[in-house]
Each structure stands twice: as structure tokens, then as C-alpha cells.
Image 1 (cartoon, helix red, strand yellow):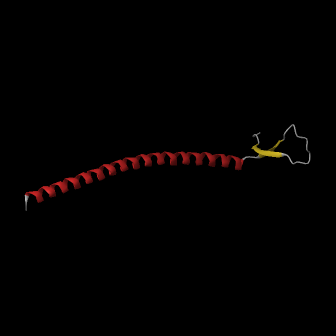
Image 2 (cartoon, helix red, strand yellow):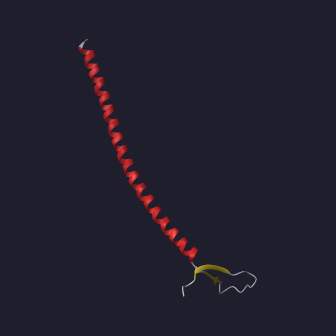
Image 3 (cartoon, one colour):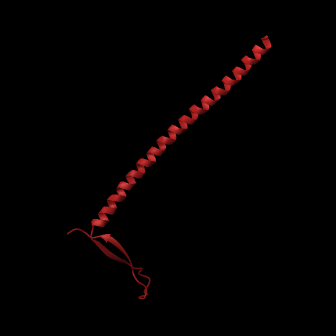
Length: 94
């Protein structure tokens, strides 16, 4: 084997090593981004779980409450043909 062939092979191996090091660096950067994304997604999931618990609590409270219709009228309108808008709220406990 000539010296030039050996030098060419060494040069090629150095290029391959540099390429592998770039791939490794990209992999580490991607891993760091994935870990951050997972951390952020975990926060979002936790927030949604909390919101769902609150909504379920309110839903249960309204399901178990006696509701009262409250008329919602516009004092400037005097059109008796239009039905009143109403909202339903929980009645006060005695």
C-alpha cells in the first residue's frame, strides 16, 4: 500500500468521523428539544386535567342544584310579542 493511499484513507476516515460527530450533535440537540417538548406537554396535560376537574365539579353542582329562571329583559324595548330571554341560576339554599 502506498503512502498516498494510506493518507487518502485517513482523510476519508476523518471526514466520516466529522460527519458522525455532526450527527451526534444533532441527535443531542434533538433529544434536548424533545425533552423540553415533553416537559411543556406535561404541563398542558396537567392544566387540562385541572380544568376538567373544575368543570366536572361545576357540572355536578348545577345538576344537584334547584334552578331558578331569571328573566333578562332590555328596559328600552317594549315589544310584548318577543319572548323574554332567561338564564338559569342555582337557587339559594334555605
